[in-house]
Structures are given as structure tokens and as C-alpha cells.
Length: 113
Image 1 (cartoon, helix red, strand yellow):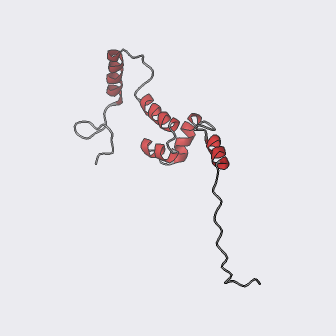
Image 2 (cartoon, one colour):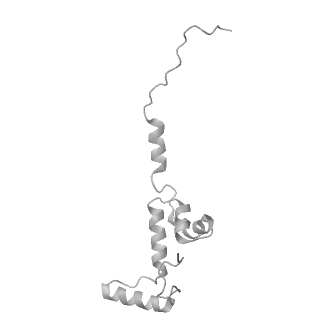
């Protein structure tokens, strides 16, 4: 299996300058503004994953980083302190009505000591 996402015809890596030129032509053809190079797609993908709550370990693996620490050092600013209402969820869980746990019935078989 080739580790490259988009290998060339012979399985080699593409020339980044050629890929950039193709990308820019596609942006023009689509009527989109030039918002960055091809590498911006990688950052967009990672930031969207994190915004959706994907675990940092998953994003790190998707990007091919050696460790989640690398991913975190680059993308930490995309993580909100409470990005998914975690504190609200915790509070709702704490305040949820609970059924009292049923205690074992004492059948008198155990002597009080």
C-alpha cells in the first residue's frame, strides 16, 4: 500500500509546485478566492475535525503526526475551553433524577454482631 494520499502515476510523490498551480487554476475555475495554498486544506480538515469534537489522537493519526502532542501544539487554538458544552452536560448529569438503589433485603439470616 502506498503511504501517499495522491501518488503520481509511478507511485512517486507529486511535485508540490505543480500541485499548487493546479489548485490555483481550480480555485479560479470555481470562482473561489485564493485563500491559501494546498496545505491550507490540511489545516482546514484538522480544524473542522477538532471543532466537531474529534479526539486529538484521531486527528493526529489522520495527519500522520508522530504524536498527539505535535497536533496539540499546532491546533490547540482551535480547541475551545468548553467547546461542546461539557460543563452543561456535566451539570445536567449531576442534576438528573436518580432512582434510589435498592438495598439488599435483610432476611434475618445474619446475626447482628
